[in-house]
Amino acid sequence: MKKIAAITIGAIIITILFFYLGIFSPLKNELENSLEHNFLNKISINEVSIENRFDRYIEGSKSLSSRTMIKNKLIEYNNQETSLSELQEYTQPKYVDGVKALDNIIAAYRITDNDIVADYGDLNLEEIQSNYSHSPGELEVILTNEKNSVIINSPIINDSGDEIGNDIVVFDISGFMESVNQNDIQYEIIQSETALNQPLDQGDYVVEYRKILDIDYWLRASESKANLYGALNSIITKIVIIFVILLTGFSVVFYKTISNAFNNIISELEKKIKKLNDNKKLLENLTDQVPGALYQFQTKSDGSYCFPFASKGIEELF
Image: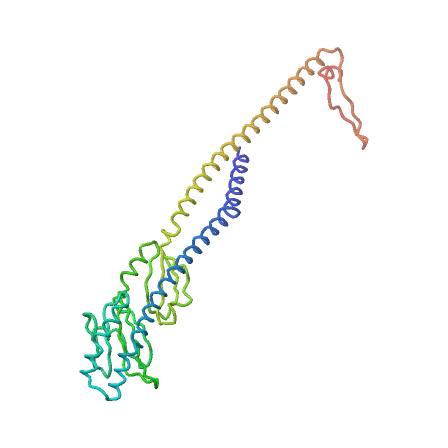
C-alpha cells in the first residue's frame, strides 16, 4: 500500500509540474502581456489627445502674439512713436477679442518693459509669474503648482527678431484632465528628470511615462495591478480551483483503481498458494497410503544426488 501511495503522489507531482510549466505559466504570461499591451494602447490614445490640447494652447498663444494690428502698435511704442496710455487704449479691446477666441482661457496679459499693455481675467499677474522664471526670446510652457492650469509665455518678436514684449496666457486644464481620468487609468502631468527608463512595474501599480511634445513635461499614466489584472486573476483562480478539484478526483480514482487491482492480484495469488498447499497435502496423504515407499531420486551434474521427495514409508525401510 505504501508503494501505491508513493506512485499516486508521484503522479500528482508530475501532473502539477506539467500543468504549471506547460500550460498555466505560459498562458498567464501571454494574457498578462496582452493586458499590458492594451494598457499601453489606451495611454497612446490619451497621449495624442493631451498633446493636441497642449498644441492648441501653444498655437493659440502664438497666434495672439502675432496679431498684426496690436503687434504693430507695440512696435510703434517700442520705437517711441506712441505713448503707453495710447498703446493700452488701442490694444485692450482688440486683445480681449483675440483672447476670447481661445478655448479654456482663464487669464491673459500683454507685457512690455514690465508694464501691462492689456489684460483679461481676474488672476493676479504676480501670482501667475510666481510659477516660472522668464527666459527672453523663448516660448515657455509651465504647469502651475496646483496642476490645474497651463501657462504659456509667448514672446512678441519684431521684424528684426528682437523681443519687444510677451503674452502670458493661462489655460484651464482641470476639466480636461478630469474627463481623461474617468477611466481606470489615472493620468498626471509631471516635470521629472527621472521619467526616462522607468520600469513598467512599480510596486502595486503599472506605470508608463510619455514625453509631451518637446516641452519639459511628461505624461504619467498609472493603473493598479489589482484593477489591471483583476479579471485575469479571477479567471486564474477559477482555473486553479477547477484543476485542484479535477486533480483530487483523478487522484482518488487512480488510487482506488491501483489499490483494487493490487488487492485483486494479492487475492488471486493467495488463492493459488492455498490451492497448491491443499494439493501438496492431498499428495502427501495419498502417498502415505501406498505400501512400501515412494521417492524421487535425483543425480546432479557434479555427481552428487538427493531425494527431493520421499513418502513416510521410507522411514520403515531405513
